Length: 67
Image 1 (cartoon, helix red, strand yellow):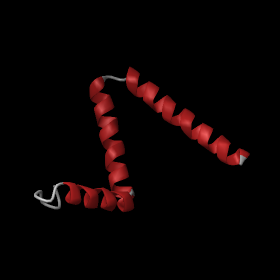
Image 2 (tube, rainbow, N blue to C red):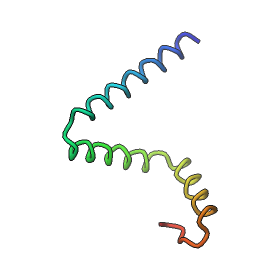
Image 3 (cartoon, one colour):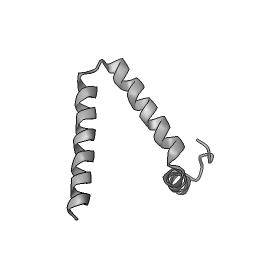
Image 4 (spheres, rainbow, N blue to C red):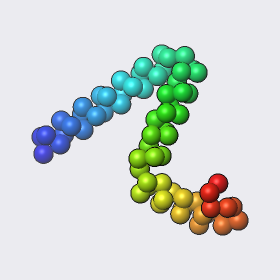
């Protein structure tokens, strides 16, 4: 239990540090970094991408599947 809590705390601090650095970065650089992170997650997390696309197709049946 203590190891899991330590890992969660380290992850929290890492994310917090990234957000702090992005806040100080120029807006253009922040957009580029966030776009890269989003693209990486899109490519790596296919399970949740499929769930999200299914949810979108249920919520908006008139829209094409790959929108």
